[in-house]
Amino acid sequence: MIVHEFGGKRREVRLHDGRTGSLIAVLSSGDSMRTGEFLSDGRIVVAEAGLEAQLRVFSSDGVEKMRVPLGPAGWISLGGEGAVGKVIVLVRPPRPARPAREATRFDSKILVVNSTTGETRRIATDLSPVSAWAWWSAGDPSLTPSPGSDAVKLFVGPDSSLVRLDPTTGEQRKILAGKDRY
Image (cartoon, rainbow, N blue to C red; front, side):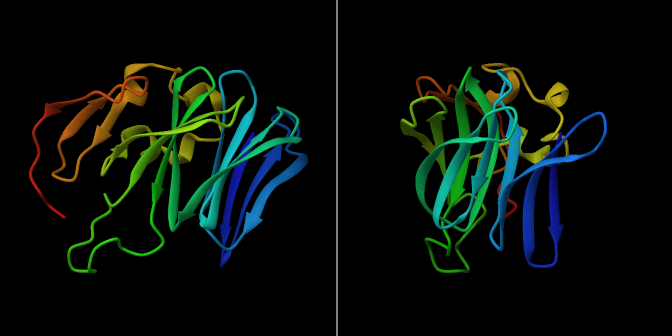
């Protein structure tokens, strides 16, 4: 199981044995935002914010296999798999891209990262994946949305609308209207 530890300034993402609770590996540790989840094939991804944000890919036993640079990020979160091995990542800038009074939580880009090749594509901006809000279930693979399912295609827009985003094509369709509350 994946355990997220947010004590004080130090943040850790750890892999523990699901039966005994024994620590298998510390996957990530530092002061900046970080989060991890299982992929559908059993591998693990950890997203780390910072001056050089990255997505790290691990084997199911916690051995690092790849690092994919994502540029600077003040906030980062995972939004599931748009397809098997294609990880949806939300990246927000370290500082507001606009003056503080105009900045919102939607100053962001949505990336799809191929967890096998490291290829990265930007598919949208100014959206937030609904599945990323379920951070408490990130360590439990049984609660993770299936790759390509409707759950990983739902995003919230800056006006609180519900948007369906196809991670393969980047096509967006507003499915519920919202109103600007931010």
